Amino acid sequence: MTLCPLTTGVVIVVASALFWDLFDEYILWSLLVGLLTFGWLFHHSFWYVSSEEEEYDNPDKIEVGVFPRHNDDMKLEVAWTLLPFILIVYLTYISWAPLDAVWTSADGGLHGDECEEGQSSNNYLDSSKGAVISECYHVIEITGKQWVWSFNCNPNDDAWRGDIVPDRGYELGTDICDVGTIAIEGYGMQPLLSLKAGETYLAVMQSEDVTHAPWVQVLGVKEDVLPSQKTTLWLPMNEVGESMILCTEYCGDAHSIMSAGVFVHN
Image 1 (cartoon, rainbow, N blue to C red):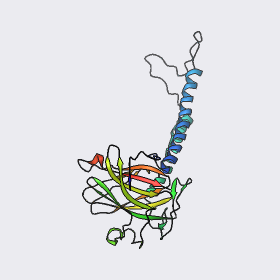
Image 2: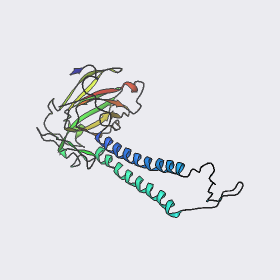
Image 3: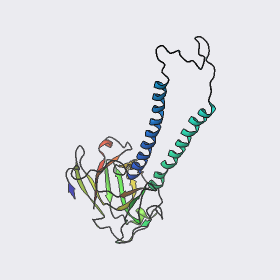
Image 4: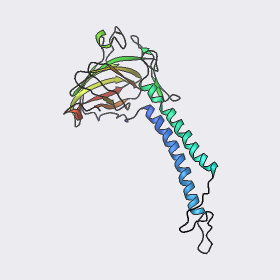
């Protein structure tokens, strides 16, 4: 398959459903805290302004050259210490959700077990968990080497995938996973990974030389790819569009152009 250029079709926003859920939550609390803080400041700035002829009220008895006396308000001190602390704990708690999604187990985790022949992942966004949930997943292979990515939709070699998930015994159709090339502006001809929306993939990865790290822009995730060691990365594709895979671990002279295209279709 050859497509040229990558800018044809729908371009997927560089963020995942997880990102948007957290983004909306953080923006909401930022607005609420900002409105409260600046509203308080503006209120006190204008409410306590004295007129020209009005005698200035000096409740703290401030005098030039004299250290001001304490005028503590314990309730206020506790409130502005405790409330931000509770908010920080809450935001930290909800921010742990992506960890379960990014590193969920391949054995009955958020994406179930590997699909049987003809079975679909039927993934969907569970807004209560802020994560994509799948009935099952498909295993594919990603290999990094200076300075190119290579993809294999049917890594059925037990020596490759046996210690992570066993050989599934069948091959994925080209409608589920396909590999080709694509012309990307500024990068030239690069590998293309074509996947299907609504399907979830577990990429089993390894490097042939040095450490690489594929950044799948459409999902906002990345994972190190190491020589002589397998790592995995979940790719739950639930939106149609185009994106890129870039290397985010310096791997030599051509690190900046180590890229690939990702095409997600219906």
